[in-house]
Image (cartoon, rainbow, N blue to C red; front, side, top):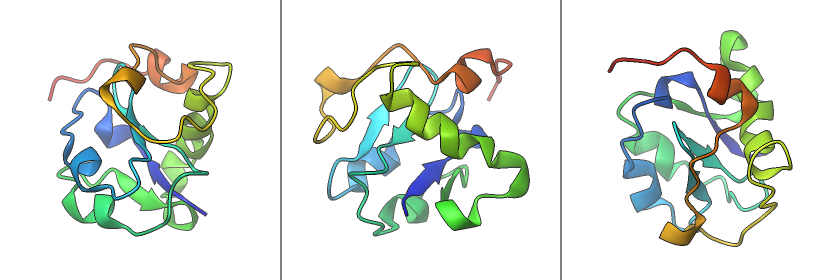
Length: 110
C-alpha cells in the first residue's frame, strides 16, 4: 500500500510534500507530483503538509479520483518516464512528462 497524489495537485505543485518525505519517493512531473509506490514507506508526512489535500492512502482515495492510482504507477512506467523505481528523488529525476491521464487533463488556473 502506498499514498497516491490526486487531481488537486495538477498545475499546483506546491512542493512541501517533497521537502518532508523521509525516503524521497515523491517525484516531479510536468504538471504534478507522483509517489513511487514501491519506495513509499507509508509515513503520511506528505499528507500532513499538502495545501490542496491531494494525497491519500491508496485505500482512501475518493471514488472520483481512483484513476489516479493507476496514473501514479503509469508515471514510472513506459507510458511516461520508464523510470521504474529510481531510488530517491533528486533534481535530476524531474521530468517534463506526465502520466497520460494527467497530460490530457484540462489546464487549471490556480
